Image 1 (cartoon, rainbow, N blue to C red):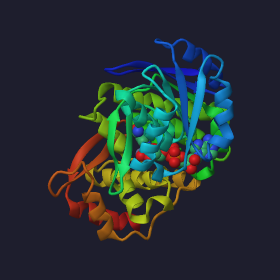
Image 2: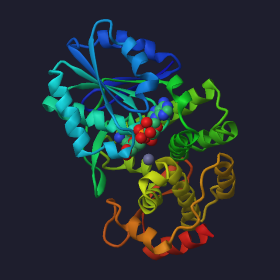
Image 3: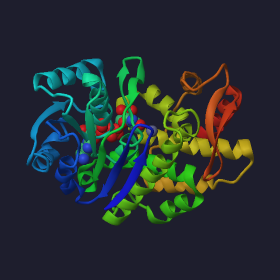
Amino acid sequence: MNVITVNTSSKQYDVCIGFGVLSELQSKLDSLVPKVSKILIITDDQVAPLYLEEVRLNCSKTNKVEHYIIPHGEKSKSFAIYENCLTYCFDVQLDRNSLIIALGGGVVGDLAGFVAATYMRGIRFIQLPTTLLAHDSAIGGKVAINLPKAKNIVGAFYQPELVLYELSFLTSLPIEEWRSGFAEISKEAMISSNDNLSWLMDHILSLEELNNELVEKCVTMGISVKNEIVSRDERETGERAFLNLGHTLGHAIEAYLGYAKTTHGEAIAFGTLFSIYLSEQFFKVDLKFNEIVNWYNRLNYPVYSNLELDPIINLMKQDKKNIDLKIKYILLKSFGHPVICELEEDFIKENLDSFLK
Ligand code: NAD
Ligand code: ZN
């Protein structure tokens, strides 16, 4: 088991990563002060049949445990489902000493975290991530729901008591969800160091045949990088924005294709490739663009070559990070040296045109 301690202005908590860490849940719960009065597990309808019972068994010795199951998918980060969850919290009489367990991917984590942040002005919660992408969403304390017109626009910074990352849960993940989560891990490697990236490129040659040791190393690397950045910039006033490498184009692709047509990470992987391409043009540096394209191809990342330039550029301009007409872009001077640049729209357009060819 690997343990990473997260230090934030409001709380210090552990992230326990490994195969078999779920067995720690009961003792961790028992050590919480004040004593937990009641537990509500929030999960989705795809995760529940797989893991709800196992989690209940690992936390019901000294606690009364309720559960609430939401439909899977991004649509559940809505006001309607949020209200249903809060109503359920009230109906089962959660009080200030109760605790919510978020059992699922980023959707459950973001929603259940926001429920915990706001029910009775905030009750405690624990993250039990079940997707690879949730190595990103479960760390850092951002919890949120969506408005129909804008993702993650209603939320809070709210830290969990604990993150228990039971890696055996990942065995049932579909391959596109592995690709989605791994895109963020490779992004974290690129912004942190050349060594991290080289290690990944040497060891991860297929996402179908990862052994336990490699999964644990990748997840631990991703979480360590995210934790280091977030601990220096909890509220995203500066370097936390580096975690958005690849996201300007990635978000535009998600919006252009419709969120159900691609996973977040697969769109981000394509966006990351473009960021590397742009960085090479902008800084006149060699970032091994072709090698990374070949690596991503080998891992079967999709290529979105039929994008229309103007709608994509317009979507990029809507990004909330932009000022005036320039587009804010995360580029790399080298691996481990990300920078925020304000780029002219025409420069991006010309390069996107040649990148897509
Ligand atoms: P998700 O929660 O929708 O999970 C993806 C799919 O996998 C779902 O259908 C789910 O039911 C299924 N699933 C989950 N665990 C499974 C398992 N072990 N076996 C089989 N199927 C399983 O999506 P996600 O990719 O985990 O998270 C995406 C969300 O995370 C987005 O809403 C995004 O905004 C959010 N996010 C938040 C942050 C943050 O800092 N808070 C960071 C990144 C992403
Ligand atoms: Zn992302």
